[in-house]
Length: 390
Image 1 (tube, rainbow, N blue to C red):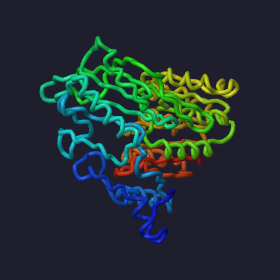
Image 2: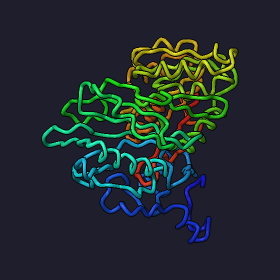
Image 3: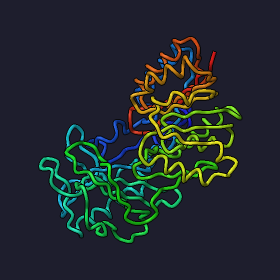
Image 4: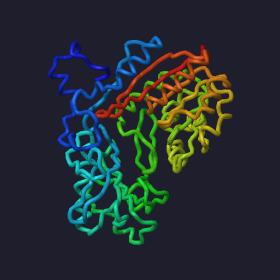
């Protein structure tokens, strides 16, 4: 389904089937805010009104699958070795709720959780206790490889170093892609610590987007809703003019840059997060040589890399929820020869601030707005916005 549905578009029964999640855990679980009519989150009315005031009408909310769309999940581990609990916190508490029938998780994640519970029991592994700070296993991250539906698991341990790493190899069930350990002995709410150990299986998850093959370390940021993200990538590819010189800030492992490299004259991806450059280089090595020479990686903070804008035609920004650094945004808007800004927003409030800043310069106008529902069940929308130099 590729637009915001109304009762006039489809028969009522079809609407109910396509837009309701109806998860049995919804009443207690903190994971979802909406269970019915999830393709019409309340925030969309706010988004629609904001753009109407700027002359943009008839927005269409892009919605993909509303169940089993999530290919990666970070889950809390609590309870006891005899009765482990793996899931999310209950609404308004820090008590963990088991969610074995979660409707948004890919089925491979739900299957993997049940196997992990048995593993915890069999190996007598003590889950973490938030009040005492004792216990070994704090979280698990589960990432599904789309091509095989196998799961990469990361065990997050309450330890600075685990000597018996072989213990964590888990069983030989065909569901497993690979096993990692992350060490986090801090008394904070941070899920991951800084140290990682690869235990077995292929170290990286590979995903194909069109002609480009991209890889992810378990610490890498990646979209959970890969099918809808792929639709957005295709839209960006169509937006970028042929033979453009492009800079991409907050680039992650370079998914967007690698996707559009074929049609660009040059592109530089800027990112500071650990492991991103290594994943980028692996993916770049799989490109055709004439394409690979067009794209480079700059390991640096985006806000300290203003010089990368020089002589570029297109700037792509994919910032965190706090939005684009204001010094960087000022350089993009006022001091560059750019002809197009492509802004991927995952923070609606920050986007409004940045969009108003861009338009108040009187140097730019909105060329295109595409809202995406990457997290069905949430009251959250991501925006793909394109600004064109006046």
